Length: 195
Image (cartoon, rainbow, N blue to C red):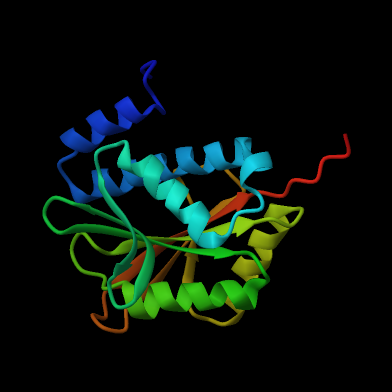
């Protein structure tokens, strides 16, 4: 590992040399994971912000990699975070502040039936759950159980992460009939220290 790992310079170099969609998807996940870490580590400053404000901060951080990122872009509707790249690469992130599984389901339905098109280089996205409540792991399990209970998706392991704060799903895109892959990531922003 390089001393630049996790830095904007590391990601900028990576973004410029990645050749395949798979490599770009993996790098974007590393980039947004770093963004989430920054939000969590500084949650005392961010825990009161709204969904759009938090998503704009993530967009600003991603921009330092040199990736073409936008907030509230029009792709079948208003997408929270969009990253574009060479050869029609497209990654979309739909964010929700956790207010129970039914509320997150609205964001998942937007991502899976409105924004996601499941074509070559544009078959992945992310549900970003900003959790201001205590016990983000419990909230993510409740969300996962809700998805499974509604029979909407196939749940898979996240082999690239050792975190209990992420899982993956796959479903058939209504428009194309092709698989659309979603990573579900909860960002624990609860902040109520006792001292």
